[in-house]
Length: 313
Image (tube, rainbow, N blue to C red; front, side):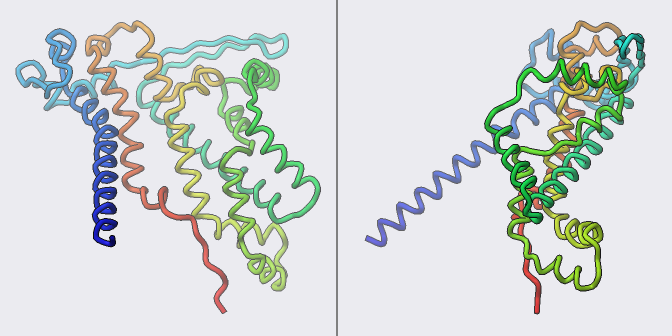
């Protein structure tokens, strides 16, 4: 009986291993295909239909060894944007000229700043609701649960109207203003963390004469850095790939994801257009590679257990 159970367990383990390997290959194959395709010439990929094979050195010599698809995007891409809107009775016009370097900077500022603000505000609200047992805390917690179960739809027009009325539309200040919100899964994650956090930390600081604000910034936030950094990284990846928010609220400050959306859905002309589909895929790889490097470097922090020890006697 024991031998048959051991054999069954081995079979299950082998089957799960094979399934995980196949799944991992299915996730890595699009990245590998995209990178190899970005090294092909338009003649090799579009005309000769070398879709799945390795780059043909007879036709893709420059694009493979000189990375001409990548150098062309930095040299030839210039995304011109213009938007006009009314703030009250005043018409406001915004114009911008954006290179790939500008879009990369916008992406970094957009993703890093937005993730830090969003995670910090959510962390503070979760701490207040978990540690201060007042009626308002219960009401806020209930509001979070309700908004998670009943999705809000049709809010884009009213948000745009509000931002334009406050003269915050198409500005970084307006974007960060939108990030001062909390709720969703990350609020519940922080809330559960603070619910299980021992009050001994705060009580020890109070005995030493620390104020509530000092306790939060000197005790609670340092203890929360593991979960805070994990949430920040996850939100950073989400915002890095987001093109919808810049498209709606910051049309003259395009991110790299915005640029990819534009160039893959619009007919463009110029030097970069001659690169065809491999050029567009090279632009996509420029968006994917930083996130891949970030995940490889910080995978233990992202996927590790969020734990905390007690006070040692």
